[in-house]
Amino acid sequence: MPRLILFTTLLFGIGGLLSSMAAPSESELGKSIFEHGVGRDGREIGGRIHGQLVLRGQAVACGSCHGRDARGGGEAFIRAPDIRWHTLSKSFAPRRIGEPRPAYNQSTFARAIHQGIDSNNMALDPVMPRFDLTQDETEALRQFLSLDVERGRDGETPTKAVLGLVPAAHSQRFAQELGNRLKTCPSTSTGERFPPLEVLEYENPADAFAKVEAKIAEERVSSIVAPYIAGWETQYVTRARTWPIPTVLPVSPLDLPAHPNISFALPGLASQVGALLDRGLARRPHAVTVVMSQRTLQLQDLVQFVRTELGPRHIHVDEVILERAAAVSQNPLWLVLVPLDKLVTTLRDARLRNKVTALIPAMFFDPEAAQQIQQRFSGMTWLIAYPYQPKVTKSGRWRTPMEAWSEAGCALMAMIAEHTGQDWVSNHPSITLRSGMTLLRVPEVLHQRQQVIVEKWEPDNVLERRVPKKSDGR
Image (cartoon, rainbow, N blue to C red):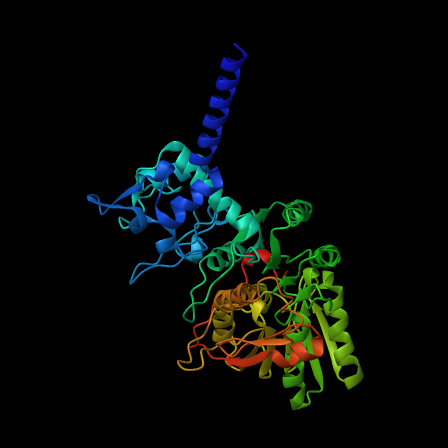
């Protein structure tokens, strides 16, 4: 009996050893499927393409099309997306191609593998194989794609996601469209890549902070690009100073205080107003009319900036608050700091005795309102300050604010992808974009002022409203 027990124990021990040797771990199985198209027990997996052609083994290995690191690639004219689980499980389009789609989960991932149906219930390209993987093989592949992004491969630093931040209210069309454009950045050069982008929608500043800090705690975020913080700039800057990641290209009409964590902001209102006054006061006017509103008065730093600029120049200043004034003074130079459509009503019954040059930041300008005023007062000249290059150099076409912001945002995301794991921000004091626009790392008002473009508006120019009406100058 003892010999029988010993023999049985030895037999089970050898069987268990052989079983463990024959059965690869889940990660090894996933790697074998991804790299070689070989499943459990050395079986060459099969995949049906174009509905009928069946290929096997290496011919349908994921890495052949999606790249050895799963970040995307292709053969000939076929371009395959990033399929790392970190990418698939977020609500954005891989490689910025197409519209945002729902995040994948285990169920929709399996459906895509077996049936070729994506998370948005749309058919994948017929060149994508419909695999004959078993349930455990499918899960092993998913786990391998997940492990790859967490650990990196061959010692490579994993790619971290970039955060965007937009208000949940869809009335903020500018913010929503900007978020969508950043998800679909076009490549401007061969081999240009973009990091994963996750756009967070927030209800209010407190909600925004909670969501951002939860993502930062996961340690998978490299930076925040183009957060929409118009109206709560001070709160954001105060909080962002404590975060271990930088904020680049904050979307705000104001000039923001200099801080290492806040970089590459476009020139704000103070810079734009300064550039306008440099241009307008060169004509040595004896007086200036500053048109404001109650909302303008809430921007205390901007109002004080205007007073500081005009006071030492010994020029008479008429401050007009539209809600309180019945008319606008007849000075030959105006600085308009209200949405232009609000000025139309005030000027409806006015009679201008002199020719007027109106200085106005682009965010307040409205071409339709300007046309209405122009029809009544043919002597009006409009000088508009743009925080970006407003015209395409070659064609002369006028660019929308959305074009400028998205160009800058995509350029910064390409920089983030190129300098993964590096402190690239401090090594780039400025970045010049293809349009000729320059982004400065340190938002000093004096330097930003020099970046502002002041253009004369003609009725034939095709311009668009600079910001949504909802913002009302904020």
